[in-house]
Image (cartoon, rainbow over all chains, first blue to last red; front, side, top):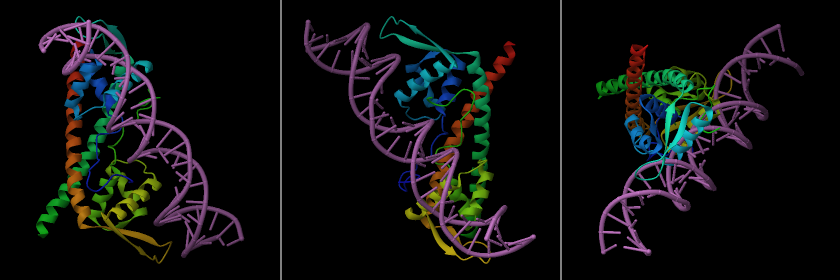
Length: 124
Length: 124
DNA sequence: GACCGCTAGGTGTACGTTGCACCTAGGGCG
DNA sequence: CGCCCTAGGTGCAACGTACACCTAGCGGTC
């Protein structure tokens, strides 16, 4: 299969969308992986791969976009809490801009599709 | 590197966005690959990989979303013209819907980012 | 105590898409 | 002929993603 099949519609969220999501959530407040796993669903994900999420956090940690520290929990296993760094905030700003561009492209798409659909209705 | 690097911002268009673009363009009018290569730029691509585009058209042809035929050109090499099939129009309808959903997610993102940015300005 | 479920974090890996480079071939022109 | 432009196409490696699976702490219950 090249480029998706007919019965399934594999058009999804932008590439590398997870990083911007995590950065935004962390900009809104310090958090830990397991919690972020729930929160990203509000940004368009119906289900997120935990593995990918933890890997993404780890990568951002290594790149200096976020800073993590272990926090022992009173109940349950210890958790790694993440907070945004200055560099991460900068990155978020840039990435929010390019996401806005993508949104603009998509609205252009929708506009042109709507125009077509209306025209199609007139012909009927 | 996992999930993109710091200096470059690799947040791009949705996954499999090329197919919907080509379907929309073909819904607007019969065309051929080389022409579509220019037209997709209006839908958010700054540069499209010709290889990917031709592969995508071929795949959609094999899946029955589009129908192609060779047309000899008076000047220059022959061209393969594509036109949308009924199945392709159906697919376009579905995919336009899911793209609208993605657009909604992105606007949610932007709204939340804006809220944060304003709040940040107040603190300054 | 043994077992089970939930929280929390993590690894291994295969697949699909993408991006880059490169190739064929026809026609116009100096 | 050599060169550029149009038009279509192939090969391949890298990246992102999805899916499965694993460790380990803590609480409750049989």
